Length: 319
Image (cartoon, rainbow, N blue to C red; front, side):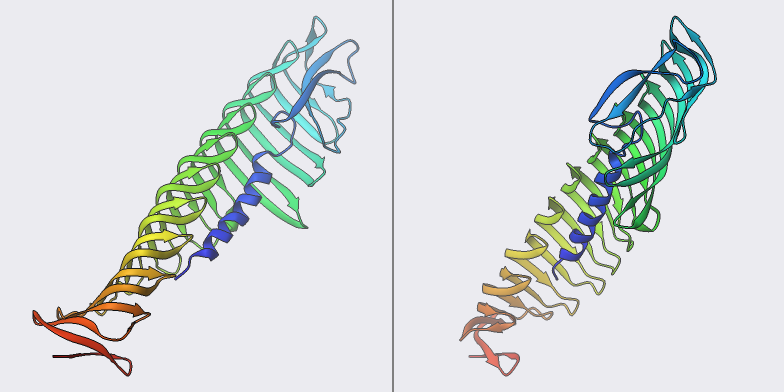
């Protein structure tokens, strides 16, 4: 049974995730320019605030609730304008240590509104932190919560991402992407635990589908790809080489009835040379197309060599 559906669902989630992983709120964008900016309510006092390329947001001149030292905001205080709120301890104009940021940015892909809290360095999240907020994409509001490690404002290290009904991920991040060991839960309840590479399921892992199927083995770019075992709720088992979710080449199918096929398989179906075995130990070896032996095959009944062939839809044996 092909598994394309879940890979597609995963790609949909990744598309959402990639938009959210680089949420363009102040102090968290990867691609940014920075500058010193003035304070509205204090003359000759400035602060350091990262700004962003390719956004529609123009930061208003903010007010500052604290003191200034040598021309820079300094000490505990709050910087805010109509859409951004930044609170914490500032040293020489830059937020350092524990702080929080709330705001709405009108980005070209839609407004992003959220709350950041955690460890800042030079007004950028570095270390442990959280983000919770919304973004609008294709007229749909997506809510995200992230708890974990940040590096230069990007999800990096161990973290947990919760998208509510849209799923979630817990594990390792690298430069804003799923990378390393982790667990991903789909919106339909399907769960994957294993290795990720550059946001995709990649390497060794286990995927438990919401319909009861279970695949354990190799993955590549989000597909079951390579050696693996796929088990169905009724006990039927596919084992062998998978290509993009289907059993291909040499493999084995064990049915819940006790029968099996071992040989060449194409698109999850016996195709070419192989052996069909019955629960009682009888076998039929030959060329197969589906569950039909082509022509006459070499059979074995209670250890005795016989001929095997199709009669209607049944495999028959004869001397």
